[in-house]
Image (cartoon, rainbow, N blue to C red; front, side, top):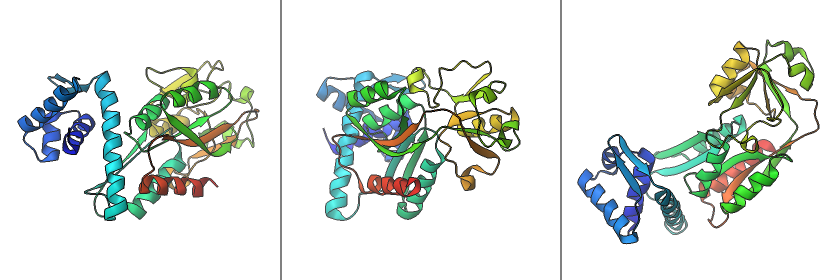
Length: 299
């Protein structure tokens, strides 16, 4: 096993196609394929299933990739510590629920530390995928919330994946609505007020448990449900359908525009929003800087 082989399989897993990965790595495809097969033979595992349309990571391959990313991350940390900088492009990835302050912090980090060469990823994704991304080091840090409803399940899932949760701030529930919605004229909103309007929430894929929902009060009955995958669609439907979503209330007008407003929700609940990290991995310089920016924005 070599560091180069580990870099090969990580790149292939990210691109999903050996031919395209070979181009990115500046290596002949037969050489890349041979190197991967040698690694699989050395450890007696199958990392990738080959298909006509590309490759698919196996279950044991996904576990192996988690270790590979850890080794490569620790190598970068050694280079940062003793050579002053990591080799090649700067890489950084955040996985998060849909919070504008997370994107704002990402922009600030990129402007300050991006430099001449970088590859940064901002993944607004499903709750379980956030946990998986950080557990396998696909992402350096993840952002999600915990409250009294989901705490037991989320805490156990984090513990099972050797992850820690650190709170950033506690938010009172708010409702996002379009600025021209009838609900926008209210100083605060009750659950009864919401009844006639469509409720928007983010899709959670195969882990579509109420405990992994990005929105609190997801178990409440609602006659009109709209499920989306991205923030732009959610905001468009808030405006176009006079819909609403229950959230933290934190929004950045510069990034998200003036057409969405937040109103307090009259309910005794909270959202403890924080970041998750691997328990056994030392934070990189970029991870530390990003967390510091998050803290400055949410203090």
